[in-house]
Image 1 (cartoon, rainbow, N blue to C red):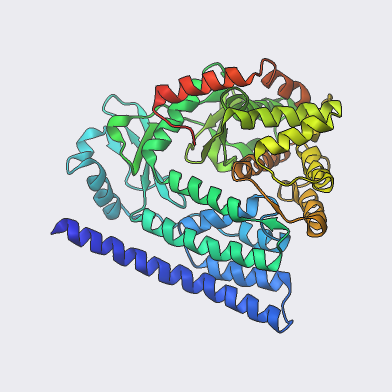
Image 2: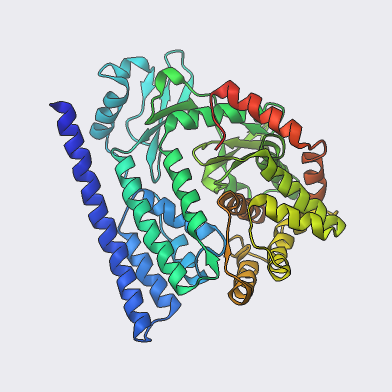
Length: 453
């Protein structure tokens, strides 16, 4: 009986979510289409309509909207700007509700399994909230507790994502967004599975074992479930609090970020797809920053080793002026029907992303550019060219690689870092071979019980 009631409640929540999200997004889409039909629209006003429609909703739709805003050229600039303003934080669950949720995950005696547990959350986000706790042995813990019925909410919100992408395709078909939609859906669904996230954390512990500048928390399986993830608590300060520190200190933090991202990718074919400032803190020793704590492992992308090979081929092709190698790299990634004109257009973007890696000198990631504007100008140039020569379908695997590279560049800009990115990248791919990546990836995934994406 209780199970049937629970199922009815889930179905009711799902229907309610579909209705609310569908009404908001569908209504905005209808108003935008109507304004276009009668010639009254501007992109800015349409973007504002969409922002208003989504602004009253909480949970996964906020995460999806912000993902769309941070993948260059998925949306027109006006829409990206409006969606980037949306806040992903949901109202935190109160103490009484937290008790019920913890009981549902660990049983009625759940409190006896901790030394202490703070019922007030320390951080609330789109899919869950984090509580400070201690283990029976006194170890400090971070417990991420998922909000109730998130699976229904995610499915409702992803269905509406299709409306947004379909609207974009009708307005401007230069970029075919179907593969982008599939990739976002796959990654957001994975983020619901906290057991998978625990395995992701264990995978990062293996991949970064030789990087003392990056700390990875251990998981506590006996205090975790599919909707509760318990990790070590890592002390650190927000990255933006170091913006006014000395250049050597900021460079040390930026170097740690570079290694946290490029070492797993170049050696194991794995990326952290969400280089958001909130996913990192800075640890210090003797009053000086030494490196970063990597806190969140929900948005992790495991690539086939051939994709990593494409990244290295494109770098070396651009560095050496080898056009055949450049084209081979794009084809390896999954771009199809490439003409000379389309390759030239893709090279605009590639030279922007790879520019700092090709330039053998100490430099910023981009001069006189704000973190919010990083990549927007180049994306606009590519988009304009694709209107004439496209459309082009962006391969599914490319989506989070592109997004993460832009996010990482934004972090470097926030820090005002000045590094020799060419030397750092050369070191990362120094002993690259497909066979080595295949071997390392297979061994690491087997150790933690993960399958390739």
